[in-house]
Image (cartoon, rainbow, N blue to C red; front, top):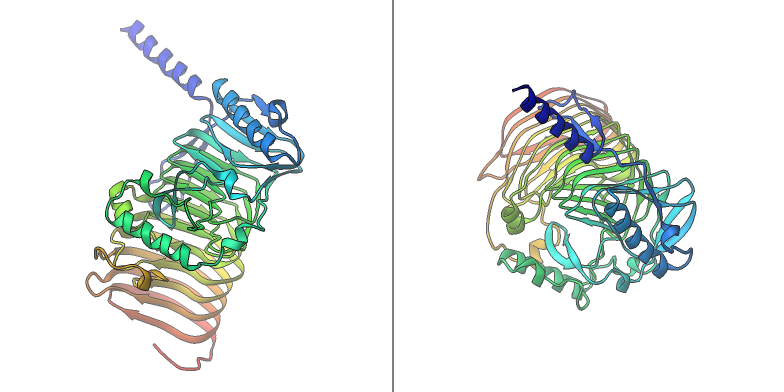
Length: 460
């Protein structure tokens, strides 16, 4: 029996050594059980891109160097692919497992903005719908133990991508076709969005179907589309990021159909939402059936954005157990905390807690809207109606310098919002109305206050 026990302990130690050392990240303050993150520690082996032929101002040579360095790093059992000081022009960077992209002090990774460099197309997504499209500028698919580490900077060229910010008719037609393909079950490999004039911009960073992802201490300056996209991932730690992107659809970090995540000590300055919780669109998300769950966001700053925390509108696989605390907006947001869905999404949003948050200025401190359709209301039909279940939502200890309204909750009559708790919310100057609610059950409100209330029209 002693020999059998010794063999078991030895096997466990060998398995741990093979897996690499771990850094444990805890979140004991979460209002739900949150298992500590056990993050892979990358071996102290370095694979500088210059060793593999990288050359400044030569995107072709540097793209090939990244591919060779990633392959060598992974084959050696893991380590760090290093970008030295200086400005490095490149095409797409594709990860291999057990590789950390290390951006040294003074390094700037500049992605050339020629769409042809990001072909052949890869399996990715567009606003919650899977498709084949241009490769994200930094892309990992089906990898484990991957990440990006600073203190360097990622700064893509943007001159060309800005020409695709508008939504011309060809783009609208392509989004209509993609929506129909999703709704009718066309296989993803046949949804070719890189063809013709679909003009669907690539993500800056997408980790797709990856496990154990570390994002640590680097800066971002601009992005063609969503900035950091975690899609169908698990066990993610993002900390100390400095993100600035003010183009069209420039969310800060999108956590989509992903579980077990900590985002902390980050700074976001965005042209769209800052921290965004998503879970896929309609039939695609129902097929994948992976809720976004067990998310902790803490000690983050948002300079500017559409909202501090946004949930939806792509959330059809469901969102549950999200906790944001001690996060603040130093400038303005449209909404401090915003939940958005519509009658095509289905899914659920439940057990969400936001506390100790603030903004200098906002339109709504807290809003739930179950009829957010944007351009889709008119350009695509409703293939299937599915109402979102919204339960157990809390915001407390929130403050704002100026707001149009404290809260607005617009549920769906077919399945009203239930179990909303609002507590200790203060606004210095309230300019439109206190609250609007419809189709909401079990709403509790405690200690809502303001210093100045001067609405043009009272609506309560």
